[in-house]
Every structure is written in structure tokens, then in C-alpha cells.
Length: 477
Image 1 (cartoon, rainbow, N blue to C red):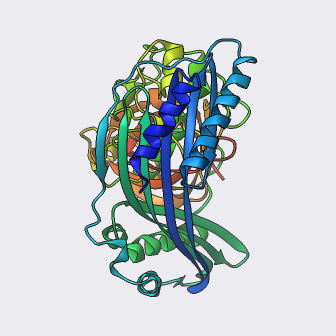
Image 2 (image 1 turned 180 degrees about the vertical axis):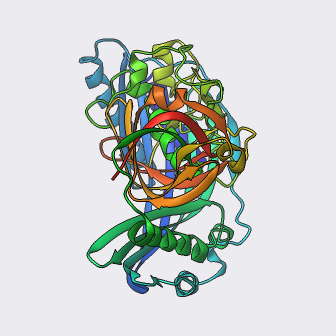
């Protein structure tokens, strides 16, 4: 950790040089990872990204600079560069940069490691992953896994943030994640399945993944797709049940991203796209009363966990859609000023080199009170999409397409024959509007959400329960 007095000295120096607001952030990200191809180690690395960034507002302009050397001389130079950048930006802005008021904090917190990352060797971690792979049946009849890759990553992120508005926050968050990719082969046919698992904490996160069972379940899904599934002819209007995996992805893409206030303002248009919420205000109905979508950084053990954002604002759950009605956007202090509201602590940065921007954390659809059997029991003719193979969504996050890897026909309340590569292509309003039942089985998937230029991939969770949609078009392969 840094000597905290250096950060206070930095913001005092920025104020002396004319900054109306100054923020200094120490940010350290230590990472260990390794990669397996077909069970063999093909690479691994340690990385240490540690430095200090300074962000200032001067004369209506904003400036940002960073340095990897932790010394007063280096930090003082960083302050001067940030001040110079702010004065330059002030000359080209159409309106002055402003910051909204916010609930700023003074706190120190850390995520406990029940089983410390340092408690076993790197070789033991590799062995743990290999043993999981050894427990997987990679061949089922005439279908086999042609290749499989596994990437293990553990990180410890430490931050100390101080600003001239009175915030001071020090935090430590360890994370463990595993990504795997499977390619199934049956004759001339191929299909692919990938998944990411992870959370914040120590090696207990790895132990809780049940990696062998997860991979085996996906091998079985590839077998269903390549060997058992049959085409559904044409396009039909059917009732559809979607699994938590697909619901989590859909709310991240069609509710989370379009609720980022910088995207609504058009500031992400060239890099990450636009938002339908530019034309739709708070209070407009976009879905049925069964749909509530929340982004919550404070979920214990989550990939996107934090208690204060990178502006020192206290985190809380953000309700993006409440019973089908559009509610709050995700804000940092600058976008909040543009909308005349308070920041809701959505400012995050990848590392010390990166400026904090508006980001999601853990986005999910709130659970209801249905069981899966209750959703199925009154469907005469429908489709259950359990896992997706691919997905696409347009720049405004309005038209989405999900292709099923594992899907089944529903007849008279029963899950029956598997279907190959069924396609659900639907507008966001139609998707949320046709949900008439939401399950009680909330589950989360880990992910890495990309945004910004340069790209800032940040850890997130995406979640939801099973949901039922009435009368939507489903296309055959």
C-alpha cells in the first residue's frame, strides 16, 4: 500500500495550482494466471500493475494523468500534467465539466480470504484444475471433445482514493476466476461452448465452482446439440422458457448497457454504441409488471463487488427497471450533474492508467415465485432454451438474437425432444413485455465486461431466474 500522505499532498498541490476538484488514486492489481490446452500447461504469468492517477477539474475542463513510480517527484509531475490537460480541454468544451453532489465515504474495507490465495503453491493450483479435467468424460458415444482450453486467473486489487471533497477509501478485493472453452466434434459437425466462473474471495471460490461438474454438464450439452437434436422447421409463434444463464446475459446487454448514462449522452457512441434510453425517459413502461432489474455492487462474493466506487461514492443497489418501468441510470458524478441527480456510484477503472468511467457491477433480474415445473405445466406448445451458443445485439441495445446450444420442445407441460440451434430474435420491449412468469431460482454467471478506449475489461456478474415469455417468434435452424 501507498503512504496515504502522498495522496493528500497530491490533491493539495492540485488545489494550489487552480483545481476546483482533485482526486488521487493509488491502484494496484497483482495477477497470477495459467493456461491449459488439452490438459497441458501452455503458459502462465505474473503481472503487477501499480501506480497513481490524478484527475482534476480546472476552469470547466477535466484532466487525467498517471504514473507508475510511487514517489513525490513523480506524483507532483503527474499533478502538473493533469492540470495542463484540464486547461487544454476547457478550451474545446461546449459546456463546463461539473460534478454532482454524492454520498462520499471515509472507509477501509477488504474481502476476506477464507482460504488464502497464498495457502497453496502455483503447482498445486494447476494440479487442482487438472484433477477437475481428469474427472470429465470427454467422449460420449460418437461425439468427442476435439479440444479444450482452461484459463485460471487470480488477482488482488488494492486501491486508496482521496479527493478534495472529503472522500477517503482504501480497499482490497481478491478474485478467482476460471474460463474454459470446449469444441465438440461429431463426424463433420462442430460446436463450441465456453463459460466463465468466478467470484471475490480466496481459493474457496475455486473450491465452490465444482469445476468438473460444470465442464461435464457442458460436454453433455454439446452431445445433445451434435448428436441428439433435430431441426425445427420454419418460424413459429410459441411460448418460450429461458434459463437463468440466458436471462443474465440478456439483462446485462439489454438493460445494463443501455442504462449507462455516458452511453445515453452519446459519449460512448464511437466505442461501445448507443442506447434506446436516449429516446425513452424515466417512468416509461418497457416491460410487464413481473420484470425488475437491479445492478448491485454490494453482493458479497460477487465478481463485481465493491462498497465505494472510484470517486469515493458509497455503493448501493441501482434499480434500472422496476416492475416493467424504466427507472434510474448508472451514473458517475459528471453524468449525474448532466441529469440533475446524485451519483449512484457507478464509476470504475481497470487500473491506475485508466480513467474511471460509468460501469455495471452485478446486473440481474429480481426473482419471482414460480418453480420451473409451474412455468412448464400450462404450456401446450413451446420451447425451452437452456444454454446459448451465440448472441448478437444492435448498437442501441434494442434488437437481440440468441441461438440455443441446448434447447428442447415443450408439449403439454413436458420437456421433450432436443432442438438444434433454435433462434430467438426479439426487440427489448417485446422481450420484457411478454414475460408473464419469473422463477425463484436466481443464479449468477461470471463475466468480463468490456468498455472504453483503451478497452477496460472489468469483472461482473450477470444473473436471473428462469422466465416464461408468451407467444414469441422462434426460428428453426
